[in-house]
Length: 275
Image (cartoon, rainbow, N blue to C red; front, side, top):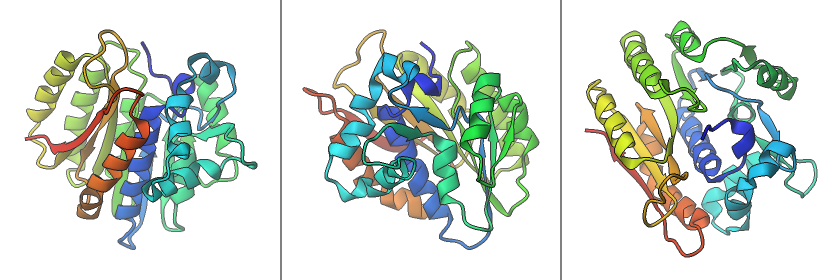
């Protein structure tokens, strides 16, 4: 299974990822100094939930539509970000991370987007027209390192690959290690699918060996027991999250768990420091 954004737009992973990205950026913006936001695997930027690719999976029904049906005010910021790209009440369009990050920019902030897939890069340029975002079409891991340290005093790198390549996790690990040597104080978010628990634990062990002092892992398991061979949920590794963000997490995570739990399952969402 690959995780190209267009096939999974608006699914439960997107709801969690984008809710936490909004909270993270807003926590960073409590300080006035400029932020540089970098998205290494930006995708198309905007998705038609009624289109062929998103329609083929229908995953939005278990993601964004559940979030909109839920009454928790803790999801209001997320819902507002989705409504902002829809001109009518109907939820036809879904904003990828680039469009959500663009909504959050202050005048002093910058946004750098990268998408290597030629068709997606073309769509991304169209989706970001009228914004101040810079769009690149480069190898994601090369760009990640090339943009560090950021020009502004502070920054955030979002790494959200499709996991199509067998060495994706190894490249993330190696690039993160190099990035920490160049930019040890920077904030980095790495998205990952949860499918094989044993393989995931091995990857976490490799990341643990990097010795990163502040590495938070947020994991959303959809089902009460692993469902072999299918998508079981998703998570985020967050390097150097600000204190204001970590303090606000528990109620937000509980709201997300409750909104997204499949019928007949309670689900689980946790946030733990990787020791």
